Image (tube, rainbow, N blue to C red):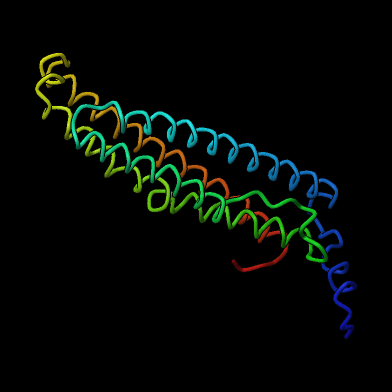
Length: 194
């Protein structure tokens, strides 16, 4: 038995019968890295926009619940991208080092799958209290109440916001299932039992 880790990694990386060529796997890993990197950039930019808009709301909204809710949304927009970076940042394939490419790709897929599965707890939930306070404050300020839309429109907006949140959660669960299929394919190719 050879104890040289570099040689063991090389031997583990040789093409597996029926598997795509390793160069194709490496290209796929690079494509996945770029996708995750750009997805995260879009999320970071969106959070910066939320921070700017809701910071303005803190100073311009009429009711204290609006102001507190806006501040909570700003806090969530700081917390969520930090969690995104911590849980689902893009790791370039070059970081695999001596690790077999299949093991590296599988590890990244598992990491992203787990982040998507738990997205409600670390990305969506932090925004909900602030959004709820903003909606709660809508009917409590006399000027806003008089100039605002009828109550049914407010309830419709409330339902619409939470429908969008539910849709975002659902899309992420679909993404997690797709990643799980890719993980299962790698497991089948490498003979791993999960």
